[in-house]
Image 1 (tube, one colour):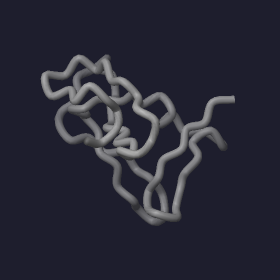
Image 2 (tube, one colour):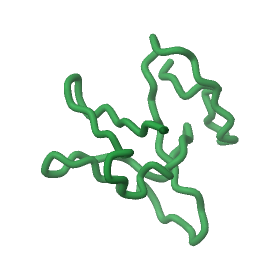
Image 3 (cartoon, helix red, strand yellow):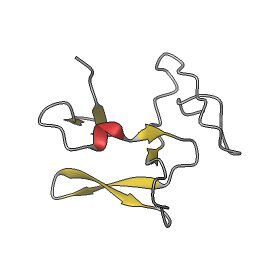
Length: 86
């Protein structure tokens, strides 16, 4: 079973595979159209700009530098080549 875990803080994680809400379908981009906010102990995604109908929803996964390197193929002009922070 896939895991969709968001690290909100050092000791707070949200597992999107429990109950699911659709956020597990948000893909990574180095130049995302969404950002995450914490609202009432919930992870809420809000748009960073106008999102066109049919456009993919994206968020910067920002994996730790020390995590195993995950290559990025987002195609953005700002792509850092990795889902990990530099």
